[in-house]
Image (cartoon, rainbow, N blue to C red; front, side, top):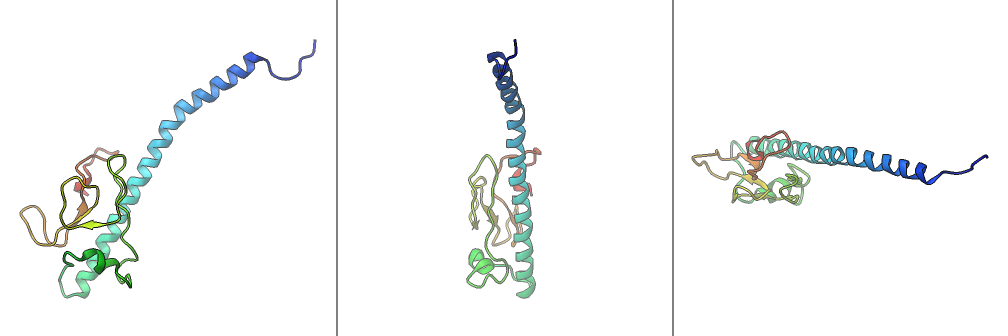
Length: 141
């Protein structure tokens, strides 16, 4: 007897294989997306620090003040075209703003206007006390 098509057993086996592959691959895919977001945030931090360094050099050793968002990426975007996103997945939503009043866990870029016991004026960091996928606390970058 010559059969054409798939039997019910063949379909169940095929669906089981697809389900198994999905269960194995999907978490890896999510981790890959998270790591790419983390890498983008670290690269954005480097770009912002470079823009601050250029400002510092052009202004005879003076760092931007509380108006840092407008100074770096104002109307003409002299130092950087726009403030890039700070994204600390999965703890915070992406923010494209530099705060001069960090809370310790806002998920935004944090900027030190004046010297303090903890940080120097002109320092920029990520205002997040959670760890990235490598186990490094975001605020230490």
